[in-house]
Image (cartoon, rainbow, N blue to C red; front, top):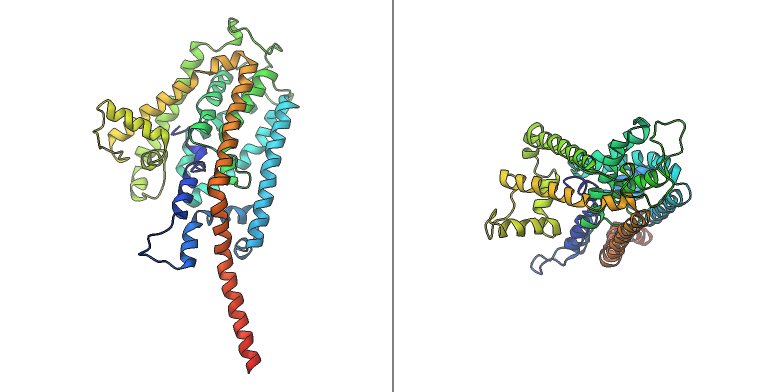
Length: 395
């Protein structure tokens, strides 16, 4: 959460945020304002302007090219195709080459993280890169490349993280499979791919002679939970909680001590706390607020204030509770191949459903307005050229 959940879901911001921004921008302005048609359309699609930065970086196009409606549609079609191909390749490795999945993971992860770094810095969301999901992503790369072959403890802890708080973020933060949107697709990647990685490592092992990896587990797809080597124990969960607390302390020191002055001076910079306490539609945030009011921790009409110690303490505690609660299903997943498969499929269905909701409820309207906005300057220029030509002919 302030970690596992948020970082990868700024695109819900990404499932929620950008959607909410889109919904807000599409709403008709009050009649009293009467903005020009061009200004109204510009307001409706301003969230997409920053995404042109990614197009420029990835495709090497000039500003004028990425503002042309033809190129906008071409790039979106291309990115949609690449998004679908990425999902197909991921499915191929999980089903046909599970022992090689770690290679696909190591190829994709640096690219996805690099894109998010560029995008987040552009929009003032760089502090989301400190979230728990990126902490786990870093540890997973260290594990599959540098961990000793007999290190089972780190594997178990990362299995708990990947199948607990990280993958649940897809549901809680409404991560969505929107194939043409690099930001949303990378959000799904950050939260789902570690789960797939440790599914493959646990049930199929890793076939590699060049990397220091732990040996594959038993070929028995239904490992007996009574066997000490084939079940998670209390020590595993203790280490998982300790690891989470270490991350939380480091995160708190960075945001509340080292960078506090910078954050106070820049209210436009978003952190997990600022996002949660200002998002009036986030289910988790509203649930915590309701429980705090019910328990008397907050007044009946009191709202969050990310500057106060009370709000900070509430969310540190709430995030810890969320993390521990999402640990609960991992023992069953560790001992049952069938349940683990069903679990991953349900999470994936949630991401697909969220993507479908975005396409039909938000994107259809937003994309139409986006193209109209891009066509306004083009039409104006064409009209200007035409009028000049008429004047010359008359002369």
